[in-house]
Amino acid sequence: MAINKVVANAGEATKGIENGMTLMLGGFGLCGIPENCIAELVKLNVKDLTCISNNAGVDDFGLGLLLHQKQIKKMISSYVGENDEFERQMLSGELEVDLIPQGSLAERCRAGGAGIPAFFTPAGYGTEVAEGKEVREFNGKPHILEHALTADFAIVKAWKGDTAGNLVYKATARNFNPMMAMAGKITIAEVEELVPEGDLDPNHVHTPGIFVQRIFQGVNYEKRIEQRTVRQKG
Amino acid sequence: MLDKTGIAKRIAQELQDGWYVNLGIGIPTLVANYVPKGITVEFQSENGILGMGPFPYEGEEDADLINAGKQTVTLMPGASIFDSATSFAMIRGQHVQLTVLGAMEVAQNGDIANWKIPGKMVKGMGGAMDLVASAENIILAMMHTNKKGESKLLPSCTLPLTGVNCVTRIITNLAALEIKDNAFYLLERAPGVSVEEIKAATAGKLVIEGDTPEMKLV
View 1 (cartoon, chains in turn cyan, orange):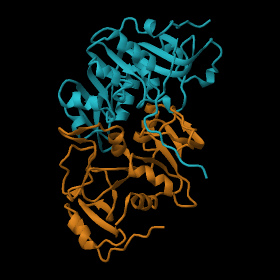
View 2 (view 1 turned 135 degrees about the horizontal axis):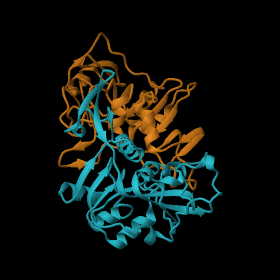
View 3 (view 1 turned 180 degrees about the horizontal axis):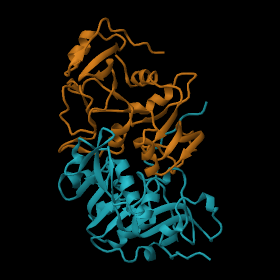
View 4 (view 1 turned 90 degrees about the horizontal axis):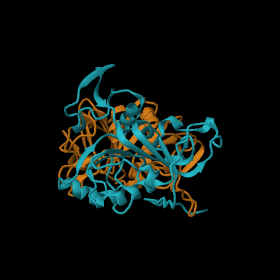
């Protein structure tokens, strides 16, 4: 039998999250975000959070809900263009923001989970992003040193998960979730469908259960679409 | 003069058979509609798709399947899905042959600025810095001038940079240009646009060699 990681709900899963902690939250835009845990964080009203997430939600959904309650002290993201409240808090100086290139963000999370303290990348060389960072040339090209990221809690969303914490993501809802799952001291996974161990094909597991400490069956997923684009038949 | 569709059509002529291509948000996204007949390219979306297809039919949208612009999309046969680290491994590792993106400013040495206007607009760079730092071929899709009529093709950028010495080709509403030897080289004029108009709209060093042909769009 595999180690059982199941907890009852978002309330139980988020136990131990306190003011001032660093959280990683999976998702790209509103796609693949841990909706249940975000709602729980709003309820808990924990403050002074540092949130590492590619985006900051929209004004009334996703991390925008935490911004609205001024629960976030610092955001570490790559793109925040969809959120007016975010832009307002940032330009007024209420919110500290560290914008980093998307590939560097992904790799910094991966490195954090993989035990690699830092790495060199060409992304951002010669820009504001490189300020204060070590530059070294490899193969005739300048690179900057980027450090790994870890978090007190990583909160991810998967399509299916089993009691052992193995996760399978659906389509582009995968995005940052696998790397963040690796980089949390405690990783919480909320899933649309929680299945018994043995039900997931081991060949198809995206995140092995070792990276997940708590898993629960999520409820009432809204899965909001940011830009509904369609074509006409015929 | 070209409209957005025209710029996309002209950029599509640059596609080569067997290329993997990343298209940015806005005009670049339109390029997918004009892939020349007889060639096969696959579109990469940095949120985790290779083999991205067109928008879904009404009623078939899937909240879990979007492109980097957060628009609902579909998958082509043979597509694959991956996480963000793998996606940028493709980009940083130069497995993607072409990047097409927009710009607020471009300099004659190939510097690009497209992510921030200090004190006004701060949306973030998204994947643009990773893309421009590693792409072998970068084509900018942009308007030649801003809304005030000022040139966006400059001796040096005034806005915070996205990348340095990286842009090789630019398609604007007025012209096709190449960047080399610290100058904009005029390749083609957009339909109905004179060399004089292009000169007037270009603040950076512009090199014109012989007669400049007019673009041919299908």
